[in-house]
Image 1: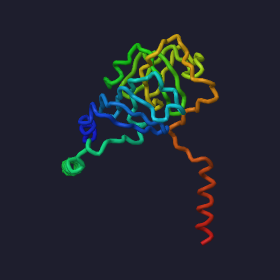
Image 2: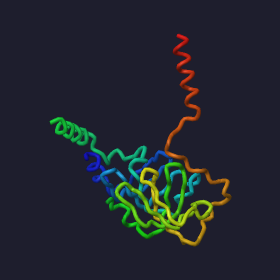
Image 3: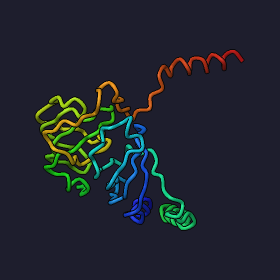
Image 4: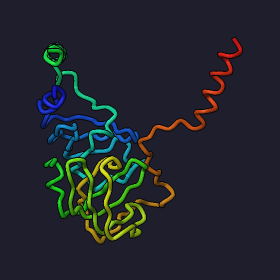
Length: 95
Length: 110
């Protein structure tokens, strides 16, 4: 559940999501659920001319299982805090 | 039930599937594994009617976007040949078995 919480802290920030079919979508993260399904608002497709299928779409739901990468801005993530939380979760899982 | 799709209920959406198909349809229902019940399904590019009603397995869904254009209006994508077919999500290497055959051949030759 750690990354679910992590993504919840990123809500309302601008992210770029690369899907497994090579489409890249940039937009404001609006919500996440437990499967890491994402909802983006105001999306723009970085290779729009190649894939115009999502023109005239602004609000999009992305199934978590088809996400390859989520690009984040460096200042959006505190890696030390995240590392610490990951350790703590691993410790509590072992008990 | 994943509440994320609730805003799209009974609206026209675009659905991209894992095999690279792209359709527009009305979202009639869904469940927590993103199985979708669609109606009035049309091809996104050509506008051809695919089915009047469609149950899409959740694991076939890549994304669904809320369509914000006139439902009757067929968007002008320019010449249809220009539009690249969407890729699937399978990441299949063409003729992968031939590559591995060579790898094994090199190993045997050592």
